[in-house]
Image (cartoon, rainbow, N blue to C red; front, side, top):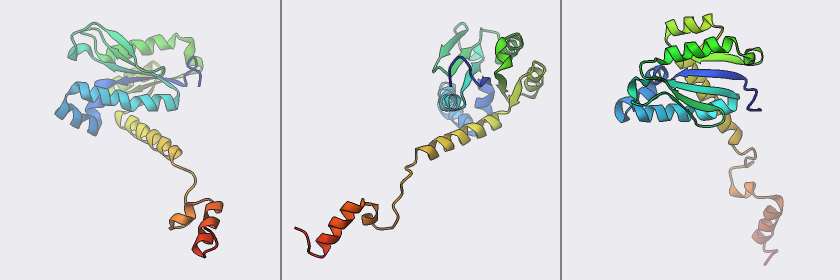
Length: 183
């Protein structure tokens, strides 16, 4: 899919998702917030590319001492850190408000991933679709499974013996050797 026409703009409330995904909570509690952020971003890279989404993972500045910035990870995924004192909720609401006046709204969806009920109600008012953190986790897992299934080899041996996996010419040669017809 062309980068200029993503199927959707997906805004992810980063710390909300980290706090809701069981695996990320365990990593956050054992290895720290930085590692949990890294794993979330890694999980969303393939998902975003597969879905053709322009994904922006938004993190609050409260856990960082730097000004707001946006890091482009791939052509489908970027990470946005808010200004100090600005919440991810505020950033997402502003992005939703701006999207209402954007021409992309006519050919692209706007999706917000958060389990914060108040945030969900607010962004729906701006015309966005909502995904809970759990729904996003399920979609990410489903896409990962689909990708793994596509990568599996399509040709499987027809029998339980190694000889069945050989091409017909090799099978014939082995048969000849078994009956003493070859050298």
